[in-house]
Amino acid sequence: MSHDVSVIGLYILDVLGRPVDAIPPGGQVDFIDEIRLTVAGTAGGTVVDLAKLGLNCLAVGAVGDDEKADFVLTTLRRFGVDTAGMQQLEGVSTSATILNIRRDGSRPALHARGASDHFEVADAALDAVLAPPIVHLGGTGLLAKLDGEPSRKLLAEAKRRGRTVTFDLLGAGPQTLGLIEPLLPHIDYFMPSIEEAREISGAVDVGAAAAFFFGRGVKQCVFTLGGDGACFISASGETVHQPAYAIKVVDTTGCGDAFDAGFIAALHHRMDIPKALAFAQASAALVATGLGSDAGIRSFQDTLTFMNEAPRRIAS
Image 1 (cartoon, rainbow, N blue to C red):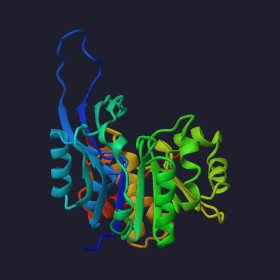
Image 2 (image 1 turned 90 degrees about the vertical axis):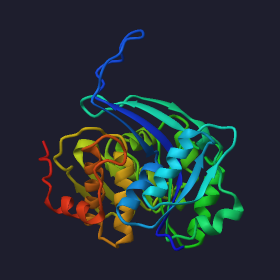
Image 3 (image 1 turned 90 degrees about the horizontal axis):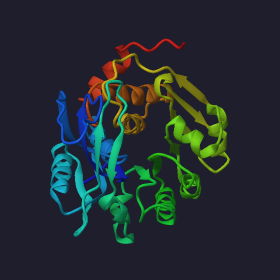
Image 4 (image 1 turned 180 degrees about the vertical axis):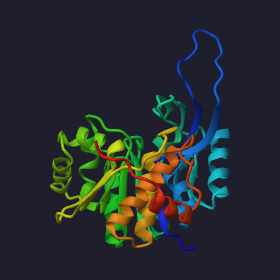
């Protein structure tokens, strides 16, 4: 089977509830409007959205041998994702998160690390994993066995084979630069949030943050800016900054993953940079209108229509 993209990294089961104003004390119960289970993570959320956008996807990650794994694998297959690259590991649980979604869309989380900490890509699997023209690695920082030198070798081999490499991480802290710096020369599109980019680089503004990563080998930065939209900056100096879409936010879970999916889909369709950035923003905006990382996006054409017709926020 010929795939358009290989999506490697963090696969999670999310349990989401909304709206959560407070955790009830003791053993008391509060009632909320909605509870959902979704496949999520910086790889899992991205691959589901890519499949909904019409790409033929190979999922490459790990789940455990529990009931959560059954849900993750069944759901991926239901969306048409090829799970041949998914490892089912004995004796560990599937990585999972409980998210309490506030009325403003923010989402305090409780995470159990699980199988993703035991995931690695064997040399024997490289021909299959790196066969697609686009390779996305998502979740560095929560991939204990793959983080560091194994990820560097993986991305270096992807570039040696002529693949387009996209990359996103999960959160940022004091250890993050050490994990990602060896990877940066092998990344074509580095796609963190601006908060993550600032935390890693120590820079205040977008341009300085991009320059920090260019100096370490990244070719192009694509930053999500929250309510301020998104920005593309290349090492050659091309810059595109576009405002966010004007939407009513329900839940921001998976918006970054959806942005990644939209941008990867745009690369697949060979859109120019302004259109690719807009398509990525449209994908993220649609996800924010519902509960969970697979909300909102229905199809490529529906997302394209939203991109062309939805209003943008007016910059303050």
